[in-house]
Image (cartoon, rainbow, N blue to C red; front, side, top):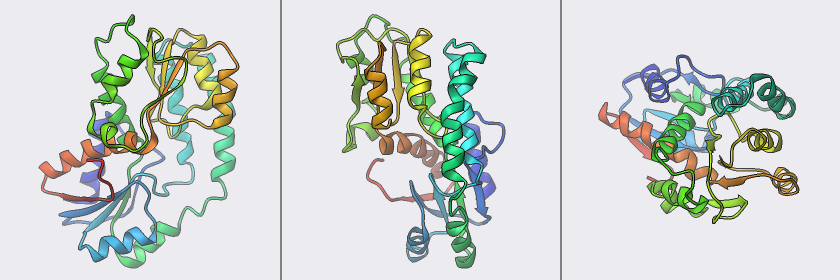
Length: 266
């Protein structure tokens, strides 16, 4: 197994045709039989991998190309998938896209990849492909859900995944009531980060009754709470990330790779 095979496997499971801007093979490697897998990777994780006899490291949030934030544009496709007109979807994405560009421009994006090169430790970042794998898993478990069922029933379905059962951060209904009718549901994940206020409001204004985010900032939640809106389910960041990562790791195990994870959410 080599690093290119690993990232190609993630793309296949996600249904992606090319490597997105928030994912990258930083240091190539071959003959990979054991990998350290972590949500966040710095120099400490690289040294841990070496001490554990790993042949490579897979990061989820690892620093990728400085324009990785452009994956946020995937929200446009997801909004359109939910029936939002493209012109409205593009307008909803712009405010936070600008904020992300400003936030990431000064990032110390090269520190961990440079350390990996010095240590001769193969390193990959696989972000939105894993998130898309998890999003598809959630969509599949919700197939056939009755629109007249309650929001709490949607939560119960998603909570069947072991990652959510084991997580310390439980699934929360942050807007609306668990007793509300679920209605039309949208899973807004796998677009670099949550859509914040503008994108959630756009979903609610265009026929979505129940929206799922992985996480949301307090100011965005407060603005939404002050308006007439639907129900917002927040699944929890780390459990949601491991949902897709673990699916990838099961596939890699079939191909002879032993994953060493930094979590108990397996």
